[in-house]
Length: 561
Image 1 (cartoon, rainbow, N blue to C red):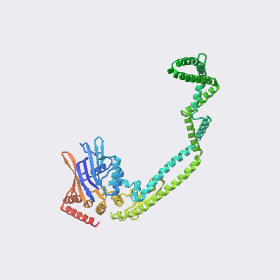
Image 2: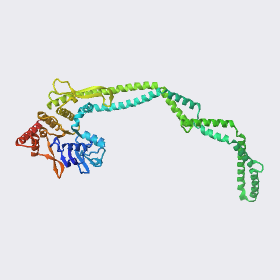
Image 3: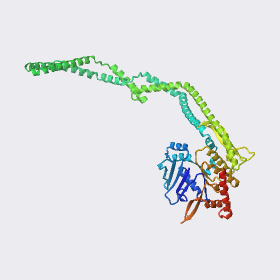
Image 4: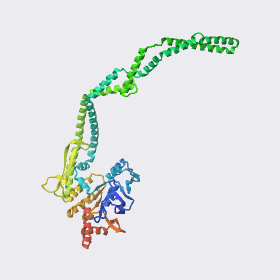
């Protein structure tokens, strides 16, 4: 419920604060007094677009605050799911400001939020009906959404199921398009076959390059290696080589050791060194003898390495191992293409099954809507009769569209016949603003039984009506207000008399500035305002008496309803 509204520096309003009551809150005043500014302010704080000249002339910032309390447990849960914290007191303080430079601040319970979050929260709390909604009611695209609000509990699980099926269906369509495209690309098939043949013909081995490079290095330097190895053996074991010199050293050390026992260890060390050098000499002798000088093998290695290099360059890879990985990938793609007909047949079966399942869910949704539509037609007709349209016939036409979407395959349009003998026609055929207002009120009344929305705001609901019809509209608003809070801007005394709380909006001029003020009307103030609405600017005893009588009748009507 909307409990408090505070407006600062918005258009003609410098400062205004209103404490709203439960039930029916009436806002009235002269044309141009600023009633629409209040609605603009509420729209603004709930996330709507900003009207021109919103900020009061001379002010730096316009601010609007609303304080609401939430009664329904379901609403508390939904608000929490949107990421907005709501305490045990179930209170929401929504604040929005706008500076002259365009900077806007939005907070709920003191914490900054985005405009998107604000709109999502506001949609759960308050339903505003203004003149623009007449146009939206004429749009058949809105009718399906309105009908679905009557089917909520039954329809939502099906909508969620349909959304999952459609997501899977779209993914399947992409797969089919991909497979079909590859199947039709004969050039790609030929390219894949050529690449497979080329890579397979190369007989690549993963680590072949490393081995070939090592072998090439050896063969390229065979003469230098042979020469060096021969020299090593000659320097070690040749005449007057290192081994001969070492043998002489060993003899001298043995002489010293025979004379000095402490030098004996060097004899053994030299013997080990002699044996090691002898092994090295024999190794390099054999190595030089066994080393092959094969120019043909070297040429083959060079050719093979060149082949591998060209393949790497061609396929943009850095090693034979990567080319082999590419080969496996190309082979998989070719197999997929060659098996595409079989795959397409399988996907077609899967698609048909999914289409059948989507059709089943859409049909279930359509049945739910048709059942709800039948009940709603009766309900709307009954309300319209109560609102003075005794001959009205209301029909909901549900037809099947050729394509399905996330809302199924139904097309919904509201139809009406206002007079006896006329067939129901689209709402756009309604010429009377009064009739349109009553149809809108009937829909709102019916929705009120199903919605968890706690506050309804009606701006100019009385357009085009008067007399008995005005009284019927007033009584209907009073009935809705028993279970919902209503804020209603009106010019009609019949509706104003039904108010549980009445507010007068008036403007005045001071120091060449215009100001809008809001007064809570009680007792005589309410009588005076009803009298003004009845008689105009001049209030007489007769109009005051009529006003008191109208208020008394309204109170009696509220007690009997």
